[in-house]
Structure formats: C-alpha cells, structure tokens
Length: 163
Length: 188
Image (cartoon, rainbow over all chains, first blue to last red):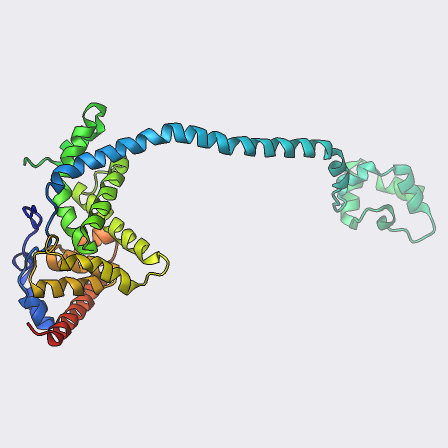
C-alpha cells in the first residue's frame, strides 16, 4: 500500500489562527484531542495508473460520439422531417378553408367614408327619417364628419342649401 | 516532481500537439490532494476512484473554456466537491436504500485493514464524519482536516462565509457529541 503524499495538506492545528484553535478546544475538547493523522491507505500504484486510465477513458469517449451522434442525429431527424412534411402537405390542402374562415371585424374609421357612395349619403341625409350615420354602418362624431367634409373640399353652405 | 504553473499547464493543454502531455502533468500535480478530499467524503476506495476519474474527465472537457480568473486547483477542487456530492446523492436515490444503509456500506471500508490504518479513535471520528449530511461533511473536511480558509471554501462551495462558519460550528458540535457517545458506549 502506498501512503506517501496522501496527506500533503497542512496540519489543521498548525495552519489555523489561534482564535479558531481556542474555539475548537472550547467547543469540542474530545475532537481537539484526537491526533491529526491520515488513516486511509491508498491502493498500490494508484497515482501512477490514474492519469493513464483517465486519458484512456477520454479517448474512448471521444471515439464513440463521432459514429454514434451521426446515426443518432439521422434517427431523430428523419421522423421529425416526415412529420413536418406531412403537416405542410395537410395544411396546404386545407389552406383555402382557413383563409375564408378568418374574417376580421374592425371599428369603422374616417377612411371608411371613402367607400360610402356620396349619393346614398346625401339621399339618406335628405330623407325625413331621423337618419344617423349608424344606419350606414358608420359611427362618426360631428367633428369627424366636419373634418371629412373639409378634407373632401365640400362647401358646407352648399350642402345645407342642397338639403 | 516539478511543480508547473497554471499558465504552463494550460499552454500545454491548449496546444493540440502537447495536449495529452499537459493533461498528464496536470493530473499528476493535483490528483493526490484531490484524492485526500474525495476519499474522506466517500470513504470507499472504489467510490473514491470513480469520483476522481469523473472529476478529471469533466476537467478535460471543461479546460478548453477555463477562464483564468480563478486558480486551476480551486477549479478542480470545485469539480471534485460537486462530483462527490452528486455521487453520494445518486447512491441515496437508489431504490430500497436509505441514508443509514449507504453510510454503513461506505463505512464498511473502515473495518478492513487493507484500506484503513487508523486506530479505534480515528475510526470513530471517521464514522462520525460519515454521519454528517453531505454538504456539512464537505465543509468539515475542508476546514478541520485541510485547514482551508473560509474564503477558499466559499469559492469552492458557492456558500457565503457566514453560512460556512455556522455550518462548521454545527458539524463540530455534532461530531463531538457522537464521538463522546461512542466512547461511552464502548470504552477503550
């Protein structure tokens, strides 16, 4: 058995400062009285062999991954690729249905007035019924309406006289 | 054996031509001190060998990206510390195994003269150390047997100095209590 050099760390009592030593003696007198020894035996030639054993293991580990990971990656990638391809194929066929189904509803804005036929608008305004812009599916405040007419260079007096 | 600086060892390791030689030197320079800690942590020589092998294999893979803002020895010690704790935790997670069974199994080495040369009091001390929870045991070994400074232990374990002092204090009190109780039970 080779016991040489196992304990090459300093004796715990010689390196410690006095305070720590005193505290240990006060706190644990029995423990303090136990001589500092290295009772473990090291198997023969352990430290000569260990570096070679570790390096052999490292070489072994480095050999394995090259062949292993290549096959492993292929084994994982193939089914994943097939699933993705299938999903793409399926979605491609049913894509039109999905496009029709998505209809976004938004609140009307001043720009929506561009789509309103001016004739219908004036006709609606001229009718005797209490017509509001809501009838036309457009919800605007008076200010927004005035802004629109100004933007369209519509003479307000002319409009009123026409009505 | 000639001591090499961290810089020299790293330069050898980082050169493809001298990588194996550099790593061999690194292991020869640090293996005995690390073994001392690991052996006290796991007691069993076969377990200690496994832990130390894993420590150096991890070091091999991590050395390429090792930042030189810490000492190589502290870095290796940190790996050995983590590997020891992981090894013991793994043993305790095995089915139909409890803490006492693992402790007894590891302490089995202490009864064999080919592995342990200590007298009765050394055996009692080691048995008491093995009863400590893993992290507490690591702190106790580093402080009591290896006389490391709290700042150094803090860098290895990632625990604050205050917490380490408290841990060591508790561990010392437990060990004292167990050793005294053991002596009373079977007087020499």
